[in-house]
Amino acid sequence: MALVQIQINKPNHPSAKKLALFNLGFRPFFLGAGIFAVVSIALWIYVYFFHGSASITHITISQWHAHEMLYGYGMAVVAGFLLTAVKNWTGIQTLYGKPLMALFMLWCAARLLFLFGTTFLPWAAAADMLFGLFLIGAVARPIIKAKQWKQLAVVSKVILLWVGNLAFYLGCYGILTSGMLYAINGAVLLFISLILMIGRRVIPFFIERGVEEKIQLKQYKWLDISILAVFVALFLNVIFIQIANLTSLLAWVLFALNGYRLRNWHAAGIWQVPLLWSLYLSAWLINVGFLFYGLQAQYSQLSILTLHLFTIGGIGLMTLGMMSRVALGHTGRDIRKPSRWMGFAFAGIVMSLLFRSLVPMLSTQHYTNWILISSILWILGFAVFVAVYAPILLKPRTDGAFG
Image (cartoon, rainbow, N blue to C red; front, side, top):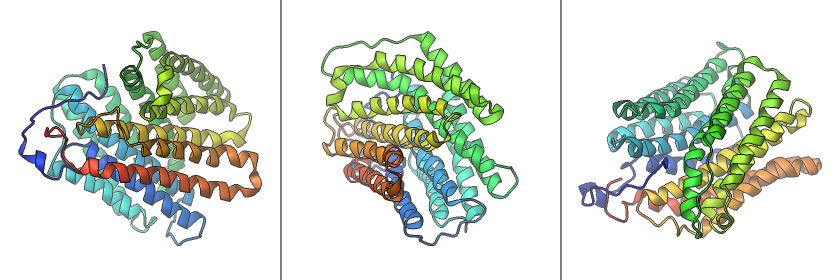
């Protein structure tokens, strides 16, 4: 079953001719995520490379940057995706109109306040925590009402992300020792976990319907269960037990299992379709991340490579590809005819990963220059997304339906 199915309903809904930004969750949160991906990294360039002033105390600049990319950008994509997907899973309308606007405003408030560093930290924390709580409620309510108990597995990960965010803020105030470290490491793994879970449902579905040839990809339940079990063991070990050799073993087992699954998902036609190769390549970048994750115990210098394989290559590229496809499908547009500019956007994110992780390892003398180039490529990739998709996200569906 596809995670996100295209539904056409209420063709003459009175709101269909008005501004559509708050008709369904993906609209404001995908647009907000795209804009924030540009603004936050532009500010990061200003602070990191040009020594711009930012009032940051109790945490490092890197922790500030990591928090906003994970709990800021990442959570916006999760919110938009799940508020849309849950409506399709359950057939029950999720937030729209003023309630959706209120939820989005909480996310915006936290992001804007945190852009000023830690000056307004109490208010940013309050807005962030309330946003997370209301999102959990908005996603869980339709699932519980429809008694689709298996879907609560996704909600559990959102709850864990909320707990991780709380740990970050408690760490900022010295209440929880190493709270920021737990929060950031945990969030990276939780986002990867969400991608593995959601990707299992949608990537094969998208590939089967997106390539010209007629195919049916192989799926194995034992493989899905094995990947889930090994990943849970890896997460628990990394966050709580911290046995380095066990981390290596579990990461390598994940690399083997997930690599076999991705091999079964391959079809030659995907490389002709940017909305497919971006998702498939991102899934492989995550898998390569597992390989290097297992090597970190022996080679600590690989930690930066692993981190950005997971974040830029995994979270960044996967979410950009997913937002691009979902936004087309849920506005009544042809998913087979995306803007040709999105191919350049996806390529920009891939190049951003290379300049952030691989190139600095090969040429250390220009380290800061490579990171600057990587940041600019990221900004360009998401700027293209915003330019292409802002009109799509703001305007009503092309078929006149509400959503």
